[in-house]
Image (cartoon, rainbow, N blue to C red; front, side, top):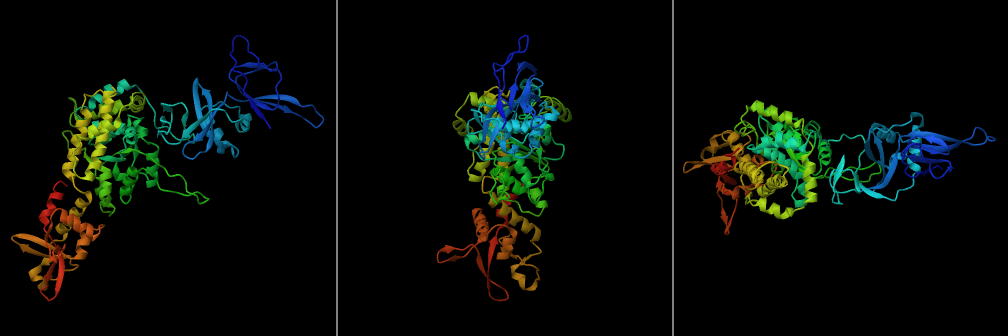
Length: 594
């Protein structure tokens, strides 16, 4: 079996130098970092195979020396932190740049074509006729003493380092591992100073742009503070500036053209997109591209941070994709309005996980201050700027967090006080706006954002209060139930209800109940099926609780000292029936902001 030996590092000074050993034990592989003389023969730098060739059984074996490729070094053994699989850290040079790749050992099980494709694709110079020697060389290499961890997911690693495909921040003994063919979306261009001057400065006075940048910076803080993922959804007409805000957010981490994703994917696709941007930001453009029947399910998945379980051919569970991420979405419609196109009722939980932000009816549509330019000029200026400077602020922010740690829990509690709420559901949304504000203020303190102190908090608080004034501080499920009943009355008030006193003379198809006028107020007497239809998707007990919370049940019965939610009526034709008597005026406060 062939063995591998790496001779001592040789420095080329004048004539090539020879290794100490004049005779080689063959067969073996050797890597020469510099040109050298071996067994009185000149060898150029590279990975060599030193073997023996015998023409016939009686012929004497003669030595052969074949150049396989440029110097290809096995630096360390790797252990994947997610599944424990073993690999090798390979390195070589291409045009003066050091290239690394984590090769899984299972890639050597077959002919090794995938290994060759990756190495050649990354620039390793290979002798074509000797390419089949690379796999035996790697397979025969003894396990290196150095062992490092790898991960296939960007973001925070258990070692404390922050891993990106092209670099590791804050640690030397961990590497990013992928197939070698995935696109690197964490790229950079220009300089951080250019980004600050051309982009950050123009965000001042524009809450939507400030929020978008803060959203991009908040990803690394989620795990540190313990805030759940979720997102904000920029709502506005076409060409209002929503997409530009998303490009600014994407420029924090990479090329906006490739870092930003789209709603035009399956649920499994959005899971992959989220995992590939773990601990950063997920940009999803144009919700109209999403499947209306699946969009709320996708919003849940983004916020919950765990993908769907799958099985191997051996019927064993594969590791699920996981992530922690904030999403920055956009669209001409809200999430619930888009879901309604597919016939799906709004899920209160989905609305809380992807909250609407007004990016269409501000002073200049999505903008509040265009810095003395026209809206079109402002848009063009920023659009040009993000194509020239990107990918610096996010990594610099993480590097600063590692080098200059702070008590993030205490800082978050202080910022959170600016987002006052009473209800627990609105509180979770407030947490999201607060973590974005904290990210922005922390970046300001670290001189990464050239904004005055308080800029991030004020912008995030303004947009949160706008959301709160529209949605209210109460239960999202209550809002959905009350809105459904109010809409049902608006649609069917005179077709599926009739006046109770004249019910015997009026024919109503698919009756939902009756109405009666009490002191000038029309009250609606819902039967049980009608009430369930008006707030479809909720149990009767949950519907009643929502009505009771706003005192919308105008008449109830008292039986044995206990109130019932409905009231008994003697029917004009004889007999008795029970109805839920609803005052529609008590429902109006919920729908006023919609």
